[in-house]
Length: 47
Length: 285
Image (cartoon, rainbow over all chains, first blue to last red):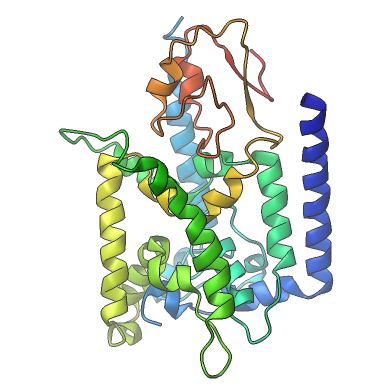
């Protein structure tokens, strides 16, 4: 069981890193930045 | 022996407060009623922290997930999912216990004395499932599927429910920036009411938002069982006395479910255990 958990942990970490790299290639960080640097009226409750 | 560890509670509050201050360190924003627009906003905050908070230095992960879903062409936010997967795999819901500013606020409110504190609400089990509904419907499906005539969706969770946005962005920006005061309407008062109910409930009940509504907690909870930081029970020494469950403000039977999806890793069970049977992957003693 402990061995299984270890592999699952490693798999999830590797998957997370791959997703980050894939997202960077698709320009996700820029999209996140663009959204985060504008005041979100919906979040405030007036949008 | 039971007296040996009393400091960690205070240490956790200090870490929570310090991290909340650090991640909302753009103090100029509070005075000017504007938000930070520097390069750090490319990173997501690990906890619930609205990116329209005047002090916020990072992006809100739940807001970012919805931003991708509301566009004309739906695209999965790989980068945000990747960040959350790495954070969740390393720490699980320890993030909720130590690095979430809204969790810290609820913790502080729960310290206010009240004649009768509650351990749970009626229908607790079903209520705890609500947060999965928030994640599936309000964060993913509604923003992605319910679009207006121009092809854009709404960030349903942020717009209709998120109390963090009201507290950290709505109230300070409306107070500091006159332009927003004229735009207040029914939606603002609805969100204000949601916030007030959650803040009041936080005095009576430990972390009601995290228990029932938080979509980020729902996501991180999934990682608790195999995160790098997790708990285990030394079955040879466990007395099955239930002291851990009595100490747990979220009412988790830790001796049976040390890696429950509800556990925020506050560590109070470990300090309550008379024989030290609850181990962590970092500290076996």
